[in-house]
Length: 313
Image (cartoon, rainbow, N blue to C red; front, side, top):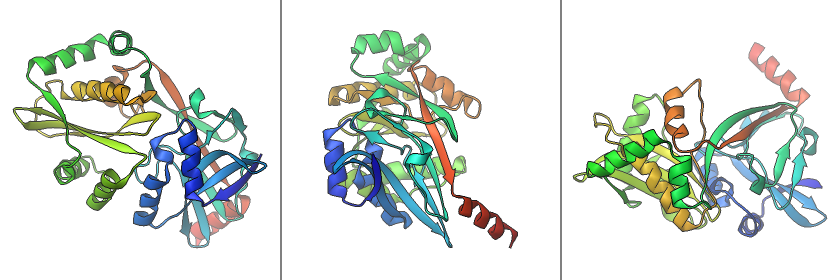
């Protein structure tokens, strides 16, 4: 297997169309991030002879004479790492860095469909929760969703809450999103970015789900999907609104919609039990199936030396 830079985005699209895929890996989303945030975007391509058997999205950022390569957890793209067409093992030595470069990768959840396992060198892990949408809705309701969340969904329905898909209300969403980020001291993506991402991508789709009571919004969930995989990307809790089960109802509607779309998995997109215990407990109520996410970092010797020198000067 040989690893080479791949800048033929049509070939990457053909690869994703032919294999189990994820929204984060299509050129459309990555090229938009590259344009807005001034990165050099390309893929690492894995080849057997001339056959492309794997891809990994890379955003290269120059910091003076140093380079940092990012794959996943980059300007709200949650996942990076490899997708292969058949089972492969990736070791640190498989990808060589330039002399003055470092790489940081947050992989896709390590499920069998992405066809990759990683070496344990320099690897830490985070976790997410996934729901197998090939199971029946009755099975998901009884086996995945715990009794507390089921009761909150019933409470929401009893209180007259409805969920509406309103992808054309980006400006309205953005006002709530910006307010929530300000409240939580988080950075914002630009509003135009959302208009372009939601309005122009073809291989990735977004559901903007609004939980409402008497036409008043109580919460919003933005869910990303492609032909294979869906995940809960962004959520907004609207301030000073009562908890009538809107969060639970949004997740249940997202599960049902993405099952109807034919996605294999719905991913609740990261859990952090110690740092964010309340969010962990909420998400844990929808699935007990945890999947690891590898955090891979690698720094060339020259990068380490040069980086230390730059800090001293």
